[in-house]
Image 1: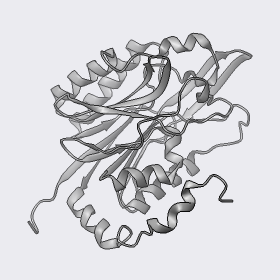
Image 2: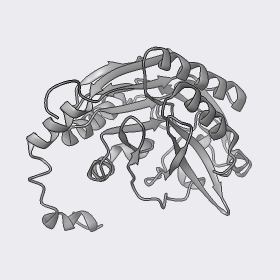
Image 3: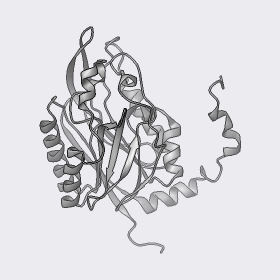
Length: 297
């Protein structure tokens, strides 16, 4: 049908400071999800690995005890109940134990509480303070789009957000909105390095290049983790945001306060703009073979 009301969907990003107690963090997430729902949100994003401190500052064998299997996962089950009660979609980030493998994963919970499946983080970082390769196998799910009650969505996890290929792959599979749960802050090896503006601009670029809204949720607070060679501290910089389909920032959180950001988009209107803009018509996949090489430089 032409004219008339389009498909309007309200998305939310929440950000909060984590303690290292699972029950506290899950309760905080639930409280903020309820607040986002009160503000009209249909799809609500919680930050990466929100059940505890961001433990990847250290390489500690005992931290594998934080992982849980995907099935019968108590946090996911609690979020399923909440999603069903509020009629909202909730991507749930968690540390997954899968036999002898471990993943940085997200379960996509639909508005009726159904678990639509799993995405496992594809790109695993390994820098000072962010030593994820110690804990996580590279994800094996590939990039996915999930058809939820309100929209088909793509979810990437933190380091995935620096790769334009992640965003493009999800949109090519039908994703109408992109979501990135995140844990990023200061760099322990260089306190003068502050990536927040770069971080935002890269994702704004994904939104603009694919003509889709994008939601990023990051934690706040200062976390000190005991490592194998003394304490390490990261100050997480929040700056959670919602971008529109030209990459414009529509809602932005600061670097220290708990926040619930909500923005509404007309997905039908955006779809017609995306199709009219011609980027998907004019793509040249036949020339993109270079993307499959490691030594293109």
